[in-house]
Image (cartoon, rainbow, N blue to C red; front, side):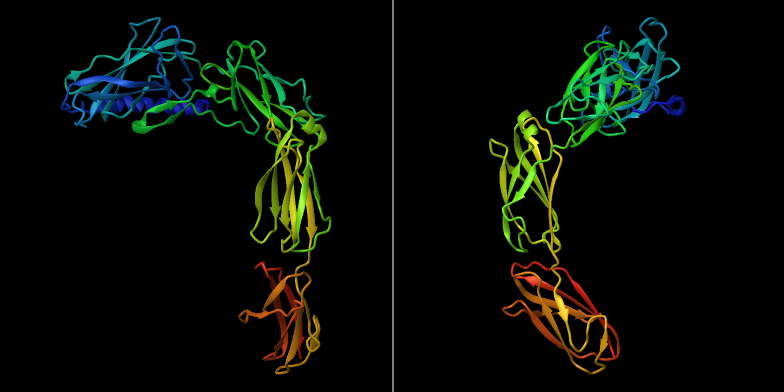
Length: 462
């Protein structure tokens, strides 16, 4: 939904143009069957109300679109037909206006704009539809009743919370109880709320097959909408924030046409609720498999038992990954991890409580240098030696266990792989073709197929 005078002006022009075109286009050619009364009546993408005492409230800032499906008794004939729409104020049925949608397709929604200069704020109107084919016309549909509500809620709602006061640190674990209050503004019948900014646009309907609107029951979406207990009243929510550390809830009031007020926000802070992460070996070596014990924050566990943990690892040979671990009745859990990240192992762990509360993350890190050591007597690193045609030996030594091969290249030459010896090391001989600066690039591969970090060794020949 969008609101504003420019959009209203543009659509008013379009509505006038539509009426002019309707007058200029010749009547639809006669269809093969007898016209049937239109079905699937909608206004403003909302359901038609046939109860004069319970009209559909609509915002007319973008004009009011009415639509229906025309048809004939010959379901095989798709010849165009016309649809007439009549509209009148309920208080003055003699003031009737008609708009026509020519060349409508039987079986598909046919849309027209009600004249915006007829629609006054606060007034109730009736409209109906009729199928026309040539000189034949169907019966009129039952009337639909709408009330124009172009006045948005005048003030923003107030937001309070008895258990998470704003702008201060609170102990987390319990759902946040919010009270949203329209403070007696009887134009307000409900509220829209969101953890994100800006508050998402309101979508009143999806469009299905044949262009048929599928109106949404907004208040059935309890994650974003709630009814007030009375016009101008209040609503109470128990919400679990989607983020650790607190959050900001944004709220706006809604009237019966779902026009929103301006947005107001409530910010609160939550103390750290992270679990603890303890490896069985506090300093595991590269390639070791270690058991980690995960324990919940005690205060969090007391409020609602932790039922699972989400473990996110970074830097492993298969890239980042996330997996869940179920917790025991006391909230603890264990998981095994192989420490094989090429620059170390980095993980964060969050707990989830039975009531849905998501904790802050706990972190555990260990860093490794997995590059090989490279040495050469003839061509020392960052130094000069030898000369063109003078062979030199380069020795590769691992810094971690389990190395089975080395892959190397000199500058832009193709890569070459050599096997490591029993001690994990290897040596190669190389003869420079000319004097000058050279770069040697080497990485090791482990028994499990993990490609380790590359070492760049520079030297000058001559």
